[in-house]
Length: 64
Image 1 (cartoon, helix red, strand yellow):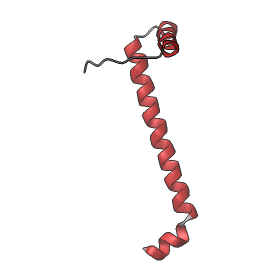
Image 2: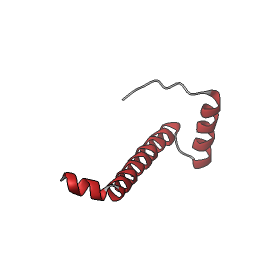
Image 3: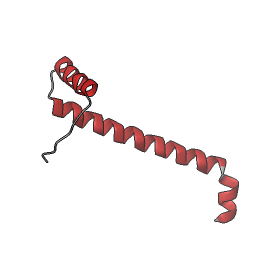
Image 4: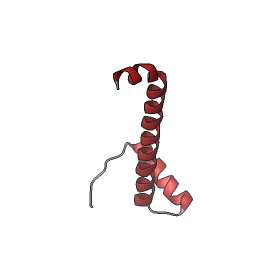
């Protein structure tokens, strides 16, 4: 899906550099970055939920 994205100059330069260094398109760099962000965000959410369930187990057991 076509879309317009405006980057700050430093981000634009970093994008171009990564694409050159890895010999891939800027589009591929952006897609990879978004996938990695979503994966890390999901992993962080899952870890936080695990911590809450562990820490609040007695309370959650009483509420169940």
